[in-house]
Length: 382
Image (cartoon, rainbow, N blue to C red; front, side, top):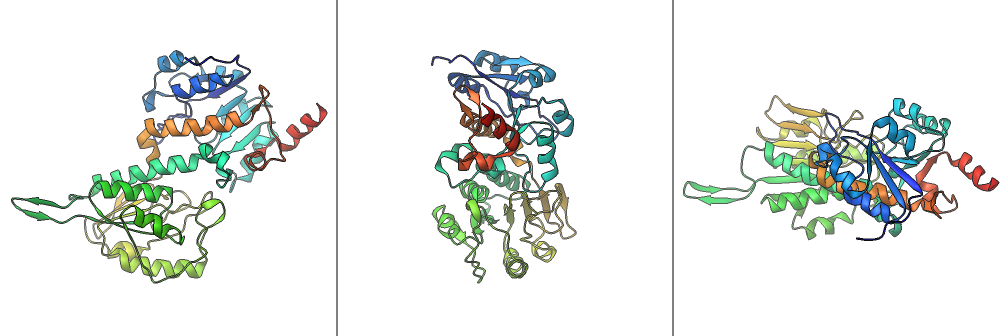
């Protein structure tokens, strides 16, 4: 067993389990890994149960299992799947670090509340993906990969026929035709999973580079007869389309979608309203029994016009599933990946045995969204 360094920083994780959340931001193997770097872990009792990790698993790995109040009182930094509620923020102490998906793109008031509380906020959604040193910290990539896999499984489960072609004594069953809109991390994983299940897969994305990626997985690239040559935005994410481009895309997708049995949409724009890729006309054009899984469904809307979180059946018999919580449905794997992301972000900021930052570094400057001035001044005083 690798030698454990004397702990100088304490990392805490709270129980975030809810009706829609089964993941945990720390797994037992990461407890051991952090211990080698001089970081001790404290976790709220029951936090890992929904992801199949017991309190005993954490204790065996070297973590302290405690009450919620004890975790808050002890931790130097806390890791979150999402972000702490206003009630939790009120209980945190000035100087503590908060690491998670903080919604900093759209909720400046929340970031300001962290700063006003004297907390240091580290927003993983602002991770500059182009930096090779940041790849293992990219929670959005890891969780989108899980989401894409689960989207394909969800669609297959909801579809009332086989996905693969089968030849039986009673005749040959044709394979299902699936369309994946958005060929980023989630889309590519959905494509690969649908292919493994035997479906005939077609995909589309506005980014020119995605065509080769789609075809490398054995899928066809949907030709809409359109050219959005500047479809890729900063950091590798898809950019939001202009109003004219959206209208052109929607009309073309609506027309093409009618030939498919399954449609999966994955086009999220971080922190912003997702683009509508399939209108009501497109939905109505699908045959009875067709299935749509909208991974981008949220309070801000979705990729499918009229979609909402949950399942609905249209008057035409199309199943429309708004599924933003798919990663939580594969909680064990999702937690394994997410906890590594959060732990690597934390480890990056442990320098000389203490939590600290250098705001001249690109990665630090991108991730630290609250507590900047206070922390910088303290550093200067030292």
